[in-house]
Amino acid sequence: MTSLDVQIQCSIHEIEPAIWDRLSAGRGFQSRRWYAFGERAMADCPPAYLIARQDGNPIAAAALFQIKNEPLPIPKAARSALEAYFRRKPMLVCRSPLADTSGLLLPETPARAHALTALANAARREIENQRGSFLLFDFLPASDLTSWTPGFIPITVSDPGTSMMPTHESFEAYLAADKKTRNDYHHTIRKAEENGLRLTRHTHVDDIDAALELIRRVAGKHNSPPNPWMRGLLVNLAMIDATWFEVRKESELVGCIVTLRDNGVQSATALGVAEVPFAYFMLIYAAIKEAFDRKVKQFRLGSGAYDVKRRLGFQREDANHAMVAASGSLPRLLTWFASGMKAS
Image 1 (cartoon, rainbow, N blue to C red):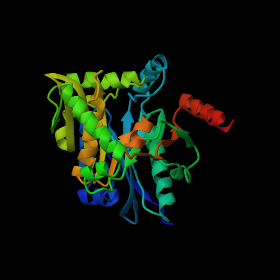
Image 2: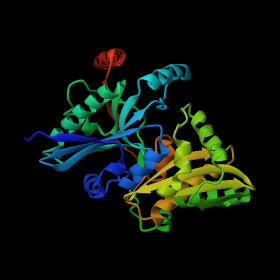
Image 3: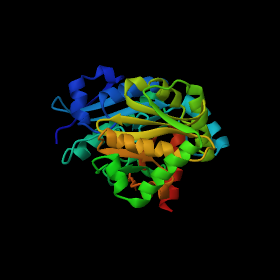
Image 4: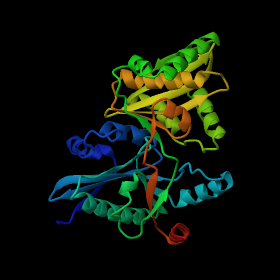
């Protein structure tokens, strides 16, 4: 097969819209508009877009971001030491920004493995040029853990997310299909109103500091590090198709969530809830209704609370795997150790 030429662009704005549209092929959270938003919201993470061409024709791409403050799910003391290290030796991560989705855009077979090899090798050269530490391709399904070049090892990096394919014609039809869900929804709305809760929807966030306090509260409850780009996400919501939901009791913000949409896929994030009964389910039902109202083809709701989400019609996704390679002596030693631990 003809060798591929891989070119690097430093911003989505340097790539012709027609070329990126053809490479992203209508996939969720892969549009040019989405990456422009990601570059703005994650302004401290310089991107590198790898475009693989065959005989001058673009056939594959990888979106990489230099990250110095990855919110790693590890003990706080170890996290502080790693954050200091990553400030000197950043990670290079292939992912769609703020979407928990891979940044790999590959063709179908037979060119898929060939394109993956070319992009992985180019990414290895890029992290060496940047004097970084780890090269990470995350949010991969198990089926994408083969055909990698030597030097990459597979890892499982997080709990799997959840998603729903909204097959009913409307939210009302969704409720009518399951008596328990319908009764729970009406019970939630009735009790929330009795407790003075009021839900409203917006296209922007008025009180970002209050929202961030609630969002960090939920992260702390689950022993998760706060998302360092959450403020950037909330500040720049107007750049994308998004809905901001608030729950207030009198004038106090007691709950929030945002739904993000791109290329027919919706994702919910920025969940924040105070210790107020029924606020959580008010927000979740509002997000589900939004998915039906917007006629999306898929609604992704993140990880955790699997029993609740399964009852609401969500299923676990298989995209919580990653391939990692190291650059530099210490990262290579750690990768070798992790590989040995995995083999044992």
